[in-house]
Picture 1: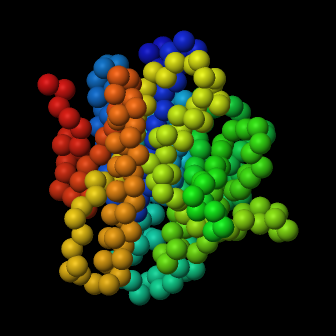
Picture 2: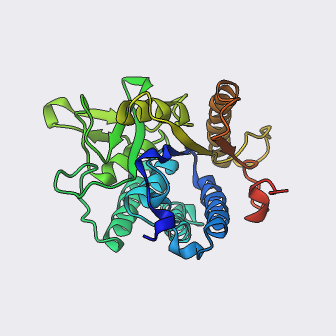
Length: 303
C-alpha cells in the first residue's frame, strides 16, 4: 500500500453500510465502483489498485448486502472483482429457467456451493469461520446481521473479529446463508451447538439498512469518543409503487424487495435527520428495478 492509502490513528473511522436486497444489490457495487473511481482520481492512482478494505474500518450488511461486505471487506476484492463474483453467483442461484431450481432447499444448496466457490477462489476453505483466532488482524472489520425464527425483531450479529459477549461464530458460508434465508425463497439456517441451535430466517425490519446498527457497533469497537470521518450508506433501490400485473411468483418477489426497500428508506430518512449536520454521512441509492442507470448516473455530479 502506498503512502496515500495508509491509515492513521487520527484519521477517524470510515464505515460502509450495505442494505439488504435481492439481486438488485448489484447496483450497490456499481455505485461503489464509481465511488472508488472518483477516489482514484483524487489520489492520482489507478482504480484497479484500490481496495475498499483499505479505506473502510468497518463494513456491514444484511441479505445480499452481507455477501458484498464479505467479498469487499474480508476477501479483499476490488469493486470489479465483486461485480463479477456476484454476477456469477446470481446467475447460478437465480437461473433464467426456474425448472433448474425448484425449491428453497435446492436454492439454498446452490447458494452454499456458490459461496464456497467464491471462498475457494480466494484461498479460503469452505468451513472457514467468521472469526479465526490465528487470522492476522485486518484494518477492515466485517459484521453481518440476521434474525432468528423466535425473535425477528432483534438482529443477531456475526463478526470477523472478537467481541465481548458474542457467542456465535459460524462459518462464513452459514453466516451469509443465514442473513439471506428469506422464507419461501431459501431454507432456514441452523447455527450453534446441537443442544443450543438457533434457526435463522434472514434479516429484519430495521436491519435491512444496518447503518444505525453499524454506528453503535463502531462506538463499541473504537470507543464513543473516536471521530467518525465517513459514513457511506449504499441502498439497493428506492421503493416503487407496486403493480398487480405479472405472475404470482414474480409479484411475490417484487413485493418482498419493495418492502425491504421501504424499510431501508425509513432508516435512511431517520438518519438523514439525526445526522443533518454531519458532513461525513453519505446516502447513495437508485430507483428499484431501474436497470437502465449507468454507472455515471448513480452518483450526483461533482458540479
